[in-house]
Length: 106
Length: 106
DNA sequence: CAATTATGCAACAAAATGGTTGCATGTTTA
DNA sequence: TAAACATGCAACCATTTTGTTGCATAATTG
Image (cartoon, rainbow over all chains, first blue to last red; front, side, top):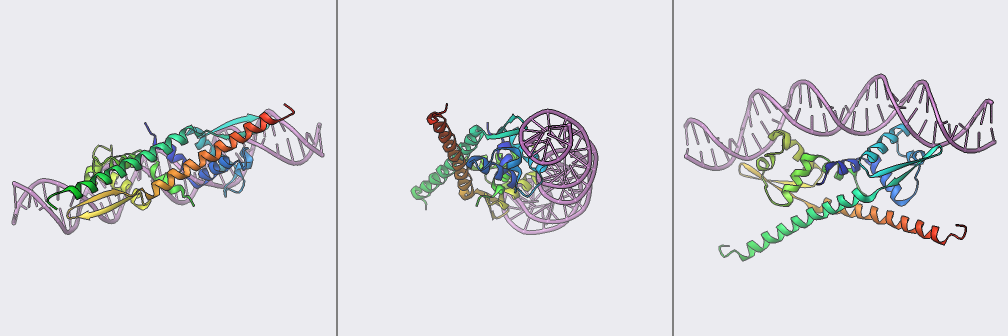
């Protein structure tokens, strides 16, 4: 089953920006990721934690800093679910269109 | 640009269920959609409004009832964005792997 | 016409969210 | 070793979210 939690985690500008940065590799430690997000380091950390809890991101402490990595498993599921929704809908529209065209009473 | 708002709109169990029902055509009027969601009709209506504001859904009043339809435009954009994130990340992992393999110092 | 049905709208309340500041602690580095 | 750096954690606060109830109204239906 699909949990709304995945989308909820992506549904915040700060969190989405973090995901973006991780994906393109521009930064990968907590402090680095926290820069220029418009919020304090602790604020960013809280958002990062939301991503960790949603299993979209993993933390790997090493020495005094901790590396952040993206876990695309959930992301893939979320993407597939959206694609499925689109497909279902398009199929329905298509069926409806066909029905109207074939309707002898029209 | 991608707005977190799309994901935020999908990030609620009630709203996601509404989207699901719309996609497979099980119901399409406000009252119908509001049934068995675990919240009151007015509660569901508020969530539906969030989807309308996010342009994921459109309302078409007709007589005393109003039909609800899915607008997949935003959905497609959201899906593509997720796919792009995955691709970027996979590319980075691949490059990293290659770098390690080719490293003469290892 | 009198019910019933489908909706809308507003006031309210509890809980979740997003952010802050302050302070503590382990890790490097000069 | 002392300073600088990377983090963690807790207390607080304002706003947003999610949901409720109550009431009003237009459209159908018997």
